[in-house]
Structures are given as structure tokens and as C-alpha cells.
Length: 451
Image 1 (spheres, rainbow, N blue to C red):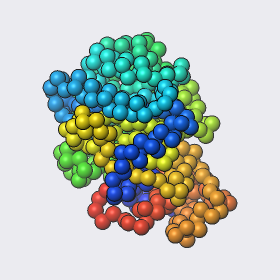
Image 2: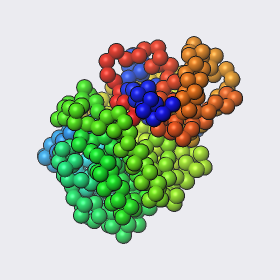
Image 3: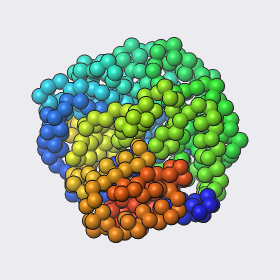
Image 4: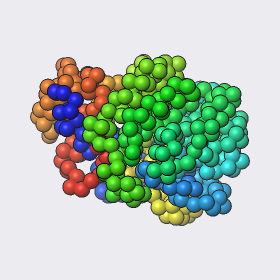
């Protein structure tokens, strides 16, 4: 099947699969705080290693493309109270642990983490990290907006152990940045990149987006030319997710403003080609890295992991998300904090974990999640011969045959291998195993398109 026909067939709304089941298909009844705590304590008793994600939601300006949970404000008096609440939330967890937690991974996301002053961040993080054991190879990272990241952020966070940063660039061109209401300069990006290298950060990631309003092949060429010059260690080359029913800010532009279908796919195809020519190696879904980077090393050794933070070389059974809307997980459960800032803060200030919803995983869901993670992290998976004998087994077999006929996978005994063509349609391949979606296909828009 040619590219145009494949795109016509497979460019449909699909989940991004940072979890299985995906959040819209979590159980309807609320998960009880004690059940989550007991499950977490059980996981911790097996291994005290954990990952921490801190959601810092504040931004001074709305970037209209953004799908994150954020609060727009120029009032920096919100910084200290919010960080104090995060510390209190951590203490609701840490008092349950019998031994000292071992921090393998810490990531500051948002929002705009560099909305917070370096001094406030360091004061808070020093207190938080003093309550944990931190191995020499721990990954400590933060998301940085080029326009708000200062030399103090780079230097002071490095002094307390941070060794990775991710720059939210999206596009280098002024005309595209103006359309998405994001303002930064190439000089700022260069200064931050150089400062991070001078301060011995071991990995620098750039976030880029394809499919933005008005974006053309010329923009992609310009972006990758600058990538080749600045040479970050990793690239996240995301598809723009147009979900205006979820994020009203995206109504700033209409469908006609966006490259769609074959036009959008050509942006990714060109970007991928140019990144590979520049020495970057493709990893999983929409990620690229130099061969020297830990992300590629994990991928090549088939130990790459994917969780609610995205791709990571670290695999801990416990992920604790602190902050408004943050998601936590262990091998048996998912929970999400309240998405409303005031509700989140009120719950924590009253000594309660701010759980809005959660999901208890059964065996079938755990096994399906393993298949999906293998596809996204290894381009292959295998299963026990009884796996496809469940309720939807015949349907899954039929769809696998269809994928193979279209050249997206090669079936092996009780497993599959993703072909080069299939690597552009990983979300569609995962969708075949999504029995929650099969049983209850959404009647209204939930997800962005796969390309």
C-alpha cells in the first residue's frame, strides 16, 4: 500500500499510550486513599527506588498550541506557597515509608518550571532531596523555557545535582512562534545550551513540534539546520495535537491553518531524514538521540522505559507525581491528582492526598500494557499463546493480519516485529491491543490524530 493510502487509512484519533488503560478508560469509581497507600507501601517494600515528577503549572503567557495543565499569571507571589504545598504532599507519602527512598529520577515539568526563581527552586529542592538517598547515576532534569531560563537556573540547579535539561523550542522561526504566541530568541537558546555545557550537564534535549499552524517544509529545514549547528543530545519531535475541545487556547487557529494529512506527514518525513543525516538515531515514537546519549543506549540494549513522563532510560516500579494534575503509578495502580489548582492545594493543606481519580490494574490490563510498552520502546513484542484467547482475541488476530497485509508489522509465532513503515504508525499498532477502546469507542473527540 502506498503512503497516501496508508495515511488515509491510519491517520485517525488514537491515544499516545503513556499508560494502559489510557486515562479516559480508567475505572469510574474513585480509588480510596488507603488502598493507594497500601499498594504503594507494598511496592516500596520490594524496592525503595522511585521516580519523582513535580508539576509546576505557572506560565506568564499562554502558548496557544499547548495541551498542558497550566495557570497563566504574572504574579510571582504564588511561587513559595505552591512549593510549600508540594513539600507537604511529599511528606504525606514519605511518612509511610519504613526506609529512606532511593531517588533514581526527578523531573520538573509544567507549565513553566523556570517561571520559578532559581533561589526558590533550590531552597525547595534542597529540602526535598535531603530526605532521600540519591545515587551518583540519578537523572535530575528540568524543562526550560528559553525566555525565562537564567544563568542562575543553570548554575544553581547544577550545584544541587541536576544534570539534564529540556528546552521547549517547538520551532525556531519568528513567524511560527508569533502565531503560537511564544516568544524566544535564537540567542537565548544558544546561551542556555552553551551554559549547560559549560556547567557539565550530561544531556540537553530540544522539544520540536511539527504540524504547527503555517509550518512548511522550509521551516523544518531551517529548524534541523540549527539543530545540526547546536547539536543537542536528544530531540523530541512531536506531532502537534490539535484538541481544541480540551484546550480552548487552540481555537486561536482553525483546521484550515494547520498542515494536515500528507502535508503534515511530509513535515515529519523530512525532519526525520534530516535528523538522521545530522547523526541522530530514531528511538521509539517521535524521539531521536545521538549514539552517546543514555536514551539511545537504553534503546539499543532493549531496556528503554516509557511512563507518564515519556521515554526514560530508568525503570522504577514507583513513580510519584507531586503537584496539581500530576499522575503517580506503581505496578498495580494509577492515580491522578486534582486538576483544579485550588482543590489540589486545599486537599494537601488538610492532610489528604489530593487524588481525583485512579485505576486498579487487573492481570489482563498489566499484560496488555506490557505489549504496548514493548511496541513503543522496542519495535517488537511477544506474548503467551493464551493471550489472544480472551474476549477480543479473534478481533485482534484479524487486525494483526490487516496490519501485516499493509506492511506495518511482521508476525512471528506469538509476537510481532514492527517494520520500517510501521514505525510511523506505532499508535495504530498499539490500538489493536486496546480492548478498552474496542469495547467503548468514543462517541466524541478524545484523542489527537496518529500522524
